[in-house]
Image 1 (spheres, rainbow over the protein chains, first blue to last red):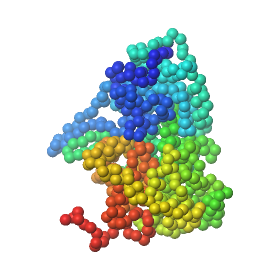
Image 2: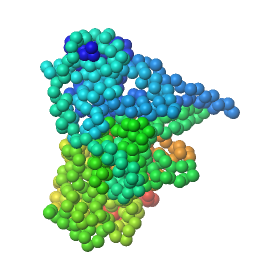
Image 3: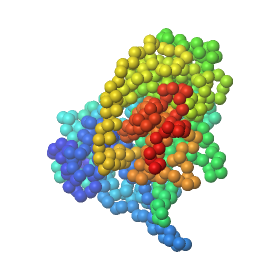
Image 4: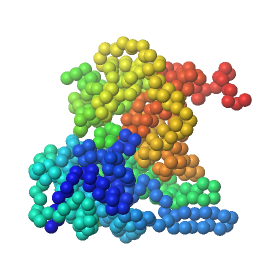
Length: 340
Length: 284
């Protein structure tokens, strides 16, 4: 069976995870911002009741905001180059929401496409994902547009849910999850299926009405040059709040940084909303105005990625909606396309 | 229909302005949306309430081009009007290019519904410059200077190492999304120094050196120019107190040059002017 009773509460479960010796990553409030960080005690952890979703997604644990790839040193005419290898630490990420867990499956497609990103892949292999089903949502959530539910299992190795008595229990999803659950202190396999609280179907009803993603895609197929883009992107300020907080956005830049005679080649987050993102060395920029850049964002989310990987590049976590300084809401924009 | 809607409608109907920038209802509680209206029918969407914290003047220096012969109308609070004045001083705008729909403001709220930090020592409830004013001018109550700079003084009372630790801990969270820059009406450079690569003046990586260089450089570039509209801090989802950094610079500029940005259209910003009586103790 895939169901485990938890003898004590959430914090005791975190304690049990810490005892496995793996590196434990969980949501914490770090200097006024909720984000995923390595913890050393259960007391640091934000309880699932304390957040709808964290401000920062857990993607940075596999795909960090900046990461050295190669180390180099120049001495006279001699250049020494040394590859950097990903670390091998066993990791457990606990406390993420189903939309964030699902996002890893989306990112996997990209980072193991033609080029295999060894850093990302190694970390994914060494990590076990324990999600927590959502007992509440807010006005920005729209996961159901992409077939994700408050208790979806996609991307999770284990999911924590509450049963009809309001107690946490664990549902294992993958072999990796089963292996971890079987050796965790305070977890006891249940002979029968445990019924989850009805709260998850209640939450589902409160989430924004699902977007008609198929219709949106066909509209996008035919409207690359529509005036829609000028009209709707005019208020975009061109920052990368949306892309950088997004659990599925994955664009990066490669830079060489040298101080005196040594330095690193680094992989840094980048975003299609920046004017320099597509600027050629010739000076030509195919996306020279914000409307073209905003169009790229919507197209990539609802069309390009789906065409290549048969999956939209969005899980409806709502972070971009919450963070946008001018309330340019991608759900609103996507809904508006088909009515235009 | 309120006065604001009426004004916008008439402006667009008469063809006096090419478009009007204002606030509209947002899609989530506590947030308003920018509306850039081109037709009189859109006028009914304009609102003004305590969540209209955004400074819309930023749009005047963005991709939104002030090319036409007609001015662009924009809804501004007292604090936002200071950005317009600063932009005119820096020759980024002419007074004729913008039609100012001033709103008398009694203070706005931050994302958590509390009084916005910038409102605590506000002396600009009514715009200093406008073409038409919505609401009655608000009487300015004297602000206790001790109160106005309390947060800066707290910072100043720290030891150098405490301050170093404070800022490093704040900057550590920076992911270099540049929302601070993009939301800032005075960050209008066509090519920001951080985007220059030959040479790379500032490391683009979000590591301690890169983040520190970025925020220090930005604060220096805004010294004597920042009007304290608070957009950088509001746009920062990482809750980095960027306004505090700028406020400290404003305090220094006021102390040394008696100058406050965005107050007087005819004043010369101190860092663009030379005066024989300027203190130059640092040179000796």
